[in-house]
Image (cartoon, rainbow, N blue to C red):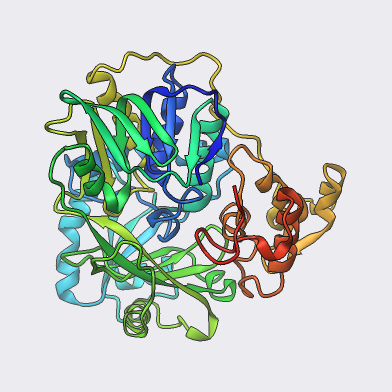
Length: 479
């Protein structure tokens, strides 16, 4: 059933954005700062239900050859992270990253990568193996050289996506979840309306940010024939006991089809190993396989020999949108008001630049909107118990800070309540995890899930056993 957030009752919109992943929400947030009337439609029940919640959260300073669209969008994004993440209350760490060469053949490729990185404006330097290990002592003794990029960082992609959506909603964007697009009505060379099971929404412009289903949505509009397919990436999540020792992002030398396996510290102190890169046919298949996970682990161990499965607390997979065109931000060739936006791998790391560029293209296509005076550019910060410098003082703000619901991640009842009461509230246990980390620690909810479900039940007036664990999963919160 369609679920609305912040409705003003209008059925005609300047822009309809399809897809509430990191790219779609970034575009909605940017549009919310203009005078445009904006509707966002999402087929799932929450933000970040696709690739945006299944990636390593790397915020790169360099990702592609100079002059390419992807390079321009990443370069337009990464210098802004410290300021934007402070404004949106999103965790971010600038750690620096090293592309590690394990043999002379890989080392021979580093000068070209270094020239590309510098051509994009990134800070890059080739180091010998000894210098690499001084920067990151956990790197293998087999490393003969490395490309050091000082401005590489990590970000929480789920918190970022939720924050973009929250900002958009606070600025008046209407969000509709559980709203798959089933048709688009044409008006000559334009899309006249977008249709969901809940009704028909007239639109002056449509942004297709539906990820791996972008080609399907283009076909519904009678637009370009765009071939998209799911490229599955599988990951290991390691405990903080290992993540706390890892100081830098460790990248493998890139392969032809992907950037290879990484060993990545997260913003929360864990570490991620991955991803694999396997083209598949089913976009909803997020299963993992013993074979591919073993491959990921073995490749990660070549870079950092001390990784251990004894410290693994979770495995997961997600499907990123693959196509022949790595980064697509352009108007449809035949449908004049339909903007396609997709990024194979650097969606998080290019999201700010992509949102600005999308707005530029819409304006060039005729969207006549100005900047809206007084639009919010920041969100109120929610104090976090686990990293607060004086946690004992938080109960004076809200007594619920004294009740720790998730011990592994030190998440209090006050933080869970904030996630349930926000402009784009969590409605599942997984939605709480995305926004607070509760149930995301070492026990993976074995201890705290009951407490989180109880708080959800109080908020939604349902018994705890009817609180949904994941979007479209068992049990279920009814809209």
